[in-house]
Amino acid sequence: MIVCSCRALSDAAFRATLDTERPDRPRTAAQAYRCLGQRPDCGRCLRTVRQVLDEARAARGTCCGGACETAEELARPVPMLLAAE
Ligand code: FES
Image (tube, rainbow, N blue to C red; front, side, top):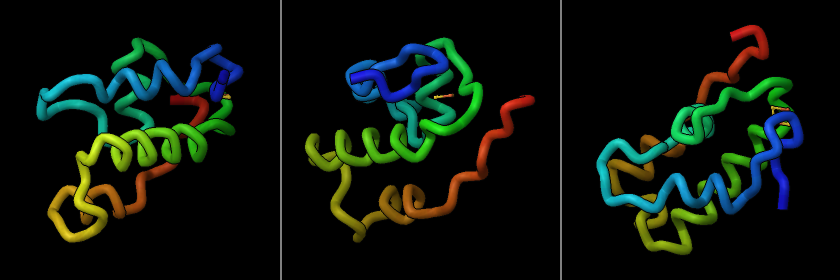
């Protein structure tokens, strides 16, 4: 399913950015875009991208559900990207 119509990026593409054990795998939607060599345009999809990443992490068991340092970091608000960036 396409989640970013501006860049024609699917949920599968965003999930695939987590397919690594590298510590620098994306934690934010902006980082996932960078992994895909893209940048968001209008930003309408960012909430959905965050949700896709959160669900993928939960499905993979890469997060404890709120009790670890990573969960605290993921819970911090992520600054909105401006279309002009
Ligand atoms: S829908 Fe993703 S940047 Fe516009």
